[in-house]
Image 1 (tube, one colour):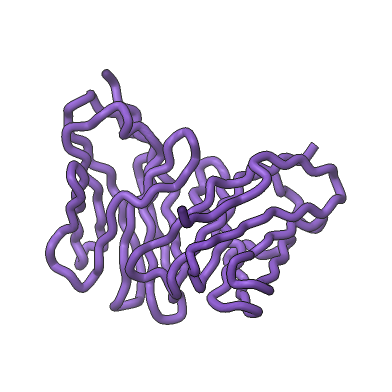
Image 2 (cartoon, each protein chain N blue to C red):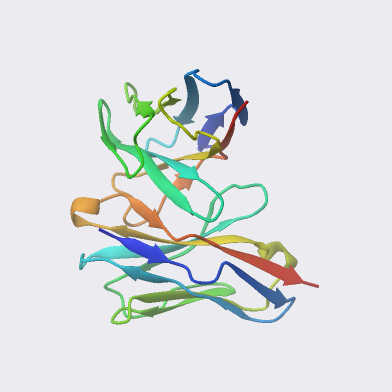
Length: 116
Length: 114
């Protein structure tokens, strides 16, 4: 069974600064993918970034990047040059193969506040 | 534009009633999923379907039922057996399995018991 843990219920950052959201996961699968989703006040889930477990290189999408530590089962999200529009709930998720094929397991979420 | 449509946006249920939440997608995705979101608990999987006429229970299926008669549609019924149905419900879809691209989500239905 998979578990995904986000240990930071809330985080805050000043506009234009950098913030890192933490995520750890546990899976017995060797082939899996990791995701960060953003849920703004509209509650629409938006895919921010994804990482394939077999790739060594950390994924990046503009101001968003991840620090993927496979041995430590850690998958943190770094937001650079934070903007007011980044304020949202952020969910880490894991999508493993094998018997869990196709199902996403989510963490509890981290509420990010961006101060002007 | 392709996407997932959930309706209604808000739904009120009386004690003892069954209610059905609609989820329709025009993305030609094979797999569809229902998640429940409660404060402080993230999203939990209720049911999922990877092909038409087949579906599997997720982690919290008790008190819920689904059908998958068409590829485009995956309605969720919240039955009177669900003791605490007040929550935000999200429907999602993916291209068979969802390992690469992740999921596309609908905009959700907020269900309240009155």
